[in-house]
Image (tube, rainbow, N blue to C red):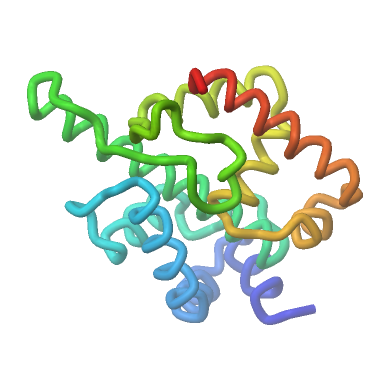
Length: 185
């Protein structure tokens, strides 16, 4: 059993020292993940460290019910996405209806979901499409979160979810088609 897995278990059981050790051990990887999220979201006003700290506080450092590294990073990625969306919403509200931060889905693992007319999609449109996907296919949403936002490979997702790679490929294809349709491409 890896040190991360042990620390996750101890943290879930309320061991704050284990949570602090886990945070220190994973900080560099969380920082890399935060930079990826902020870059994809086109966010220049939110710093990676602030995103990590806010996500850690929201998730209470527990990684929810994560039992291994892959599940932890999928969970952390989903929380970071939520923090960014909330930040974009707050910024837009502060601008009295001003534009949302621009995101594109033409990079990374979702490159098969093109950006309509080559223009950026706002964070709210992406969040709405992801929520719609979650309502019709929660497992496909989990695959998107783990692959696109968490940066995991299908093999890593298969290990974390105990599903086969062919099943995950089908979920991934359905999710991409659904998001393509939802985003008006």
